Image 1: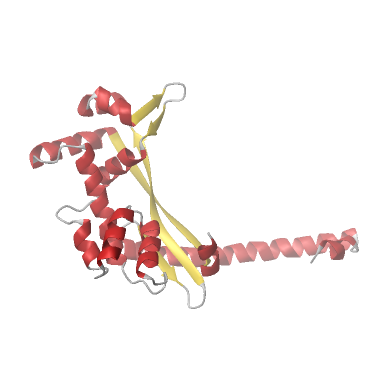
Image 2 (image 1 turned 90 degrees about the vertical axis):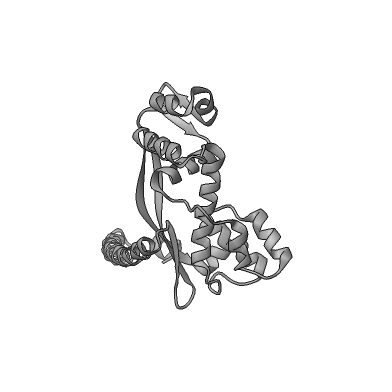
Length: 230
């Protein structure tokens, strides 16, 4: 119904239409919530089975839905964390805003700490090993090694672009999950001393006393056309 159709209606007619539309909206929202709930349940099952944070499902026609575990980090004891990691180092990576006691955390450092706390990392693997399983082309391998960032969605687009396939055609969830965990470990190695396993585990336990990472499940759905435009 366009604006012209609305303007010729009586107030009584408009009220009846509005009430009907509100009822339709309520029923539609209920159906959407049920659909989202079922997709989310199936998504969480896959995430738990694969020990990862993000998964995409494709519709039979042009739909795409993603289920992810979003993380929010909270610093419980900033001064204890300073004592554990060193005041000078921590002040470079985390800015404390006294007025409202908020913390601005360096993005890569925050990713490393969140991975450390949640165990979302993989030791003993290299990106080169994973990339060798993706393509035999040397140029493509070198390009992937430069561009892969450990972000499932971004890395999937990168791989599709480099090897020339669509999102729906790419079947590399295992590789994408591992890439994220490898890069998380690389960040952990960059910020923390991991050479001595006992010392590293002790440090990890001390950090866990100062920081918590809350995880919530989020679901998003859109058409493939929208995804390609975005």
